[in-house]
Image (tube, rainbow, N blue to C red; front, side):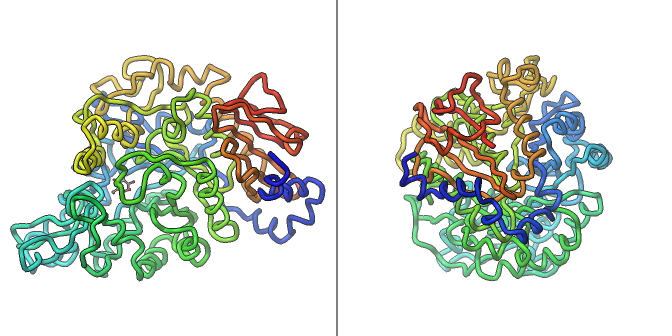
Length: 580
Ligand code: GLC
């Protein structure tokens, strides 16, 4: 780091904090920080139940499989589990198409299994967090079956129905997230219904107060079961704007529905009602999935006057493709852009609301492949872990991330299960790419990458199931698996455990301020976390170059390093280090 960058990056200020801490950190702020709620001090682990642990031999994971691994999660420092949808569902979108909001999918077990999971979790200080999918239901939900049956039934207005244009074509030129028009023709009503996602996922009509009440009742049902919070799916799309055509953004003559419907004015009124009738007064957390809510709008969404505790925003995971290209092809991105995205979100949540930090989820590829190209994935996994678990905010770990699971590269589009992989493939072909190119894009972006079964050990099907697994196990399970990593001191798993312990033992890492260092570096991601004059510094090398460090770093005490023979004057490629 040169002097100019050091000062520009704010590192100078942090260095000052080592000497004059009390001038930088005001007493009032510290008092406020000490009032952190349980979910601001814990780690959340996201489980994709279908792929976590099968206890019946069906080839599909289940709730008892989750209960079976609670001690494993406890050892990882986890205080809450977010379960992706476990409700009855035709599985058009792997459970995000729900046909009953207050029951358990029999493939995953029974309501008694769920209650047992909540109770066993409670014993270990682990809460269960449900995924609420209320932008749309399944087309097999009884509400939709009634709604589509005529124009006059009691639920006729529960979904978004529109007449065709005078020439018989769909009401607008909006493209659904999974490709093709958002409009689907219904013979019975001689009308179109809207689906922002798949045809099997009709959008609910939030303008109708009966719909809102039915949704809120369903959420309250789970609160009564003792859940610790909610992740709220696809929430920025619930309010629809005027139904008019937009300017086409691709060769199909359509425009992404996201562009037309995200964050429509008036949406917050619905969400304030949601908060008041469901969340308010409970010791739970809420995290909304809010792609497209910009950092400057966060103040309306989270914090005391907002509607949720946290929102997942996407700026740091959307660098890999151009807006509007429907994940079509990977684009180049820079480390400075990643750092800026994360730092902007940190700034936006510094005094208001709280930030959920994540690098993986069930919609994203594995981080060791998404943020790096052809690298040692063990080292890359440790780089990401170090940022995740020393950052300000609540860390979210996605199943398998803690053992460094990687992407798959299946050799035909037919092998892919995910509806969006197929949409992405078709879209790329339509844009003029060859089938080989389109498949390469699928390899990079497919959501199947993160949905392959959890790798527990080197036995049959990686210990996930004794049956035929619903999605193939990644063939690297003999080396990448939890049992082997448990025994290996230098494994990704034990790295996560060490970091989780350091985080739990040092409140600077939960309560401390965040300050980006070396902002201009394209190799190093470094930042400090300070509280009451104590500072931790994280420094990781994202590059394949050995990078020299300046005195501002070399005179600090190193408390953890991913290289056993580290040199305090340098960071080796993909080396991760923490100073105190
Ligand atoms: C969210 C979910 C994703 C799902 C979509 C539609 O983005 O995370 O998996 O396909 O909503 O429900």
